Length: 113
Length: 114
Image (cartoon, rainbow over all chains, first blue to last red; front, side, top):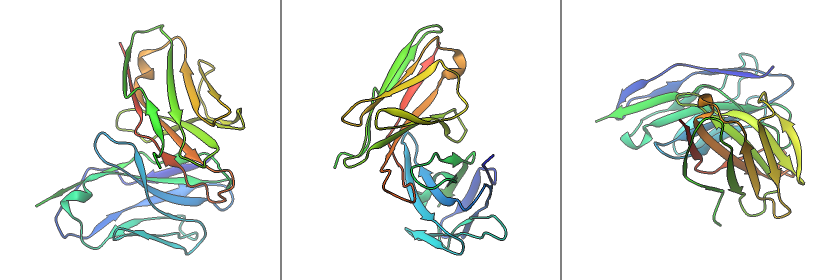
């Protein structure tokens, strides 16, 4: 079945540091890939997405590239801010139209001054 | 646009009781999915509703049931509550016409079972 594996947290960085959160997946066919962010006490917000191999999703300085050869979708940001502190979830949707999302366990990011 | 709304925000129940959670989808969306997020875990898919029918179901027992109304809003019902049902329940809405399945999440209902 479908599965998503992400690096365990927490990840603690100083402001302006470079961020990488690793995500790999197992799925049938050609899934769509997503990163969601969850701020304390809130629901999930879509951060970025990629729908086919070699696509790069980007938003708010975050980027992730859909790598089919390595089944990966690593999240990166060149310079993190304190306001980026949250839990980040990698997810996939394997059967296209309005299909269920399969999530990783989440990675908590803590950014300090 | 109000986005996805859920009610109530918090709920406390005791073992064996039944609970109903409610969700209103984002304007223009026709599909509602429910997820259970245990503390420190990623959300787990419960089921999805479209045209008032259950379209997909995850690995959850029959104690979990749902309904979708003609206005696309939805309810999640859980019977015979167990301590392990304590979690954040998230509703997500989407449009079946969206090929890439962009789902929009509500703020969730925090259920505590004592």
